[in-house]
Image (cartoon, rainbow, N blue to C red):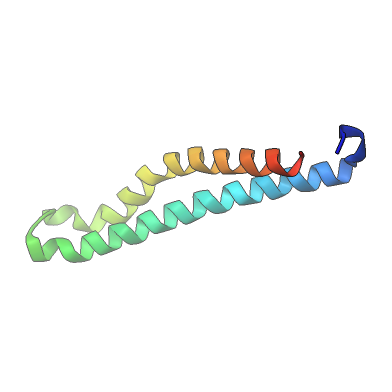
Amino acid sequence: MSASEHSFAKGIGVVLYGLVAGTAVVTIITINAFFAGVLVSWLSPMVRLTGEWGVWLPIAFAYYAFFPGVLVGAFVGWKVIRKALR
């Protein structure tokens, strides 16, 4: 397919689809990290791992997973857009 065969509306749709895919990846990574923090927070009193910091673990896990999630989401969005515009 040549570039002239792509319409403007299709290009906008592809870019929006890539942005949605990247945003979904960021959301999934952050939510999974939050639940991993909940699991560690729940298990940590059993092994006396974190003391009084166990309450903040889900928030800390989600906070520190957000930036890598943004990087992975940007990569996924770029790959989706690039593949769809070929």
